[in-house]
Image 1 (cartoon, each protein chain N blue to C red):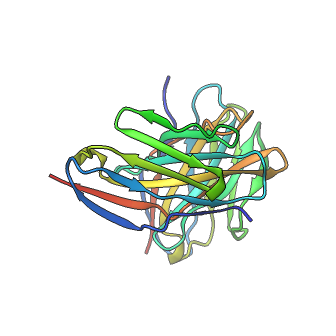
Image 2: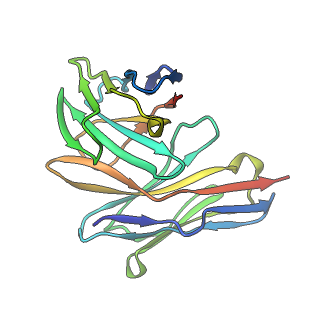
Length: 113
Length: 117
């Protein structure tokens, strides 16, 4: 069974630009969650998608958005990038039917300069 | 509010030493799940264990063991005879399932373990 695939692995962007990150979940998993990891704030929940619908959203500004496609692949977008958006972005997939069972990808490391 | 506290931020030990990672949680839920994840330098979060609130039995898996005590809201993790490969950041997490059917993980700040040869 293939794991969770996140692309790209590394990204460097300039302030004010926008960026799109991709996450392909484990086959059969319908839930994809996104987390931001920074040295200061640690791991924080961004949002969760289940069957193409956003089910939950963390406390992040509207510049952070996402979507999920019919094949369960998910993308997250950050517009008008700020230096503080530099972070490791992790996605996790699960069946979405019960507690836990989260499998994480290796993450996308975004650097905003 | 749901909260996970890992008081230790960094520990350094010598190979073969035992080390315990502390985790204290807060929740008003009677049903909840607790997790431990390992994050090696590659960045991926590796699942170690899930424990539900109704199962207070301690668990052992090889050199790893977990002590869950509801009375003190703690879920501590012990590595016996540590090895260099255990060097990583370890996170304790709690599931918050109050998002209308959705679940999200609430993480502690993490504890960096360095095992020196």
